[in-house]
Length: 360
Image 1: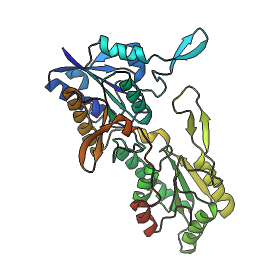
Image 2 (image 1 turned 120 degrees about the horizontal axis):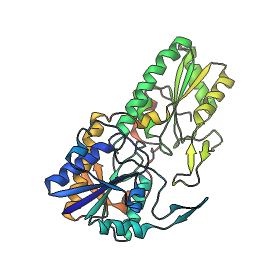
Image 3 (image 1 turned 30 degrees about the vertical axis):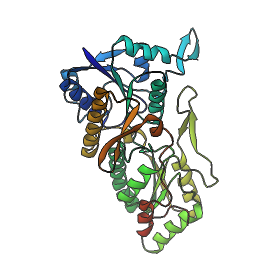
Image 4 (image 1 turned 135 degrees about the vertical axis):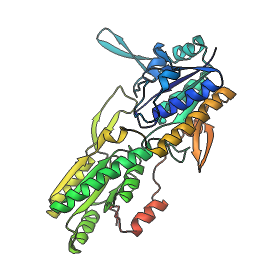
């Protein structure tokens, strides 16, 4: 029997199940079985898998999360192995590649962000036949114009801003909303514009509290005694320092960002005297049903990835270029992050309608 494999790695996001469904349906039509590896690369290393037949993928299109499970810790090249009370890290990548061969899997479709796709690239260099699918709410993969999950996260953040507007206006407060995105400000930028923010603070644009206060006080002078401030979690302090919530040493992403929203809120309240409240939206941005856009994009990615695998095109990642699905080498896909250019058209648009980025 011809077989494809699929796994989901890194953080979860809306649309993962839609990709799995599309891969499965495309595989079935070509006479292939589909094997799903559980909990990301851990399932591949440990040989934990499940047959994804027609009943298994029924009803997946609208479901958030991933039926396969995921994690961002179990890198086959640096795999945690418990020896009594001690955890040591070993290179078990050969074992991962051998499992693919033992299970007679023609190609592995790896759905993930930059970390998971970097692992896919390295497995490819060891002889594994891999096709990547870009996934992240952060939209920070350089080789694709957009990742699935991003649109849903922006909608969730925009809905939160709509709700914060009403309470901010009622109490004449400043409301600060901290959003995800790691070191890229795409979620904050898009939702800030869509949600009518007055100030947007991004990792890509250094800011100072005086500029933020000028915007807030100008609104007050105009008879608008409330303001909405959106802060990306990767935005640095006015001194240029990252604000870190904690470190997780055994994770591929050791730094856990968090706390910049509270820093901004405290500075605003101390220096302006205006009551300020802070909301950290957190993992709500990762949850829920994917938007219609993300369902369609995830389906397009899944079909394209399966077709490439069946055609014998390996070592690539599917991507969106304009309105066209294409593919690029995994090396290109993982070369650098996609951050917001300070001269981006959306930055110009936001400035033109009076949004401050805290730099002027």
